Amino acid sequence: MFYLNCIDFYTIIMQNKIDTQEKIVQSATELFLEKGYDRTSVREIASKAKINVSLMNYYFRSKEILFETIINLLIGKASGSLKDVLDSDLGLNEKIRQYICKYIDMLISNPLLISFIVAVLNRNPEKLTRLKVTDNLYNTEIFTKQLEEEYKKGKIKKVNPEQFYINMLSLIAFPFAFKHLINKKNNFSQKEFNEFIKERKEMIYNTLICYLKP
Amino acid sequence: MFYLNCIDFYTIIMQNKIDTQEKIVQSATELFLEKGYDRTSVREIASKAKINVSLMNYYFRSKEILFETIINLLIGKASGSLKDVLDSDLGLNEKIRQYICKYIDMLISNPLLISFIVAVLNRNPEKLTRLKVTDNLYNTEIFTKQLEEEYKKGKIKKVNPEQFYINMLSLIAFPFAFKHLINKKNNFSQKEFNEFIKERKEMIYNTLICYLKP
DNA sequence: ATTTAAATAAAACATTTGTTTAAAACAAGT
DNA sequence: ACTTGTTTTAAACAAATGTTTTATTTAAAT
Image (cartoon, rainbow over all chains, first blue to last red):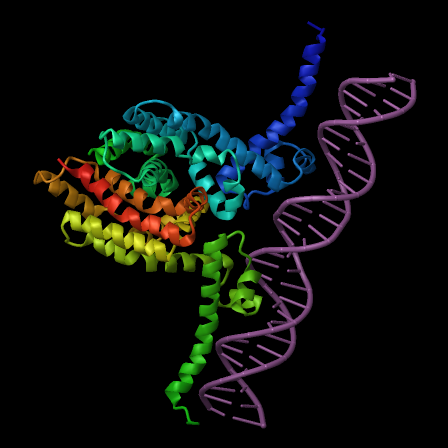
């Protein structure tokens, strides 16, 4: 097959353009997650992506902008479907169960994400708090209403919804931020850590539901 | 009073020597807590401490060593009395109550500590995990035994002590790592955040105790 | 085939970094 | 008064940083 039709040809060309840009994002994402913004140099990104240093400034205008792009991508990908669960019309118990399960599964797939977010949150709070995508990370409007209505129905104890949501988030997310310490102390391998985390799904659920009982 | 006796004189001299060293630690601690290791330059430390740049290398041999010194100091100060509570012979409920209370009070006094620890933990896990002082931060030997014995006595449900301790730690510490997001979302002032946190003392206690009930 | 615009590369730029060197200031002991 | 050792200062160093400039290659359009 020696002939390429127009579309294939265009695709190949575009492929290259997108490739470099994509490669930059890909490499930079890994490095930012692993080592953070400050310890990652643009030369390191370029080297990992096998491109010239100046291409980073050609596609993204600065390291800072590249970073912001990646923050958005990372949080967007991770948090979208979680928000959906939280805002769904599932019953309270089932919603909590699914939220915990999905959140933990996501964090097992992205074990560095929580520490990354905490780092960004401390380095430049505004950078994260002004993002629309951050809304997915912590917005309890609908969940709050649900908790209040369940209380009115006498199904659960009176509870501060904000506190309750933070409890849920804490129980889910914190172990990932403390991962190294947990692993060191218990001599966990990566695999064992994941097992430890999966064990938590039910425990967290029980802890939360038990507290809600009237 | 024009005369100073030997001891006073010696004190004054020493005071100066200690002062510079102390001033370096003091300034560096604040900066490391606020901005982290990488974004804090030795010139900034020197400028804040009002000393010459090279004095940092004179007293501590490198920025890295100064940093390790400060990590030790920070964690040591903060965690010692907490470990005492956890290892004391208080009854389970009272111990949990006091641990939560003391821990939260400490973190209110050191609101940047958790994020600092998480940052170090990700930057160089070994640096933290090899420190003796880290033991105070996460050692559950005695607490584990207590939980097991209470279970044998039929006082509490069967529970994985490691998981339970992590739950306690998560509920206490995580909100401090997410502080900026919590404040932004709820329009909290610094003061309101502290109120929010104090509210948690009882809630965390109830959450944990409720889960333990047989 | 020539022109035009986009993509890549190499080199240079100006700062900033942690650290070292060499000299000065200082206090104490002889 | 002189020497000794300690503390402080100023200057310099080499390496690394993010970014820009300039030149070259590449592909598409005329």
